Length: 162
Image (cartoon, rainbow, N blue to C red; front, top):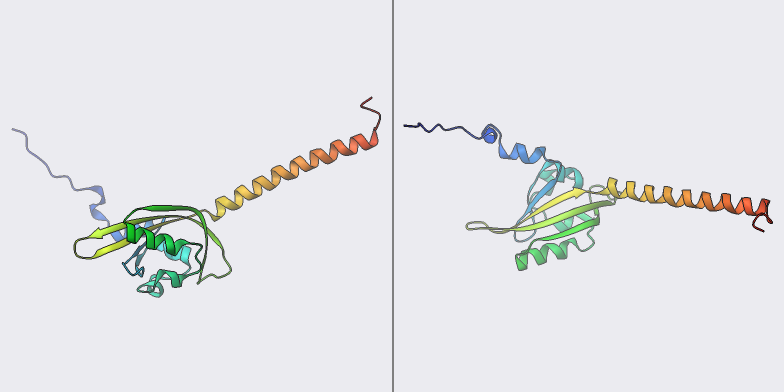
């Protein structure tokens, strides 16, 4: 007769809050009034605000430039559907000079006791967008240099094509 053995999960030794804080993806939980209930460390960094400063405040108050994010949050709350926005420019109140490009995923959470909440996932794409812009600029610069070289050659040898 086989004896069943209980093997605890390898994650059983970790506090779930510590695991969420270790993520590089920003996580924010909002209540039905779109006020902050939870924000992990990555979200606090992206929003340039500590959890103590953000807790209980309307999420709209944390952003100086929202670009339709609040309307998306209200739609997700009211319709109960998940939404994703890519490369959304936002400007945190805590860092008003920094325009950040974020990928945002909004997922409604329904609880029996707690009602509707929203889970926001933020990925900072600012660096990726900057690299793409610089790469495009280098490519254009290279093309311009080639065209200038060819033009200079034609000016120097105007009858070379005959």
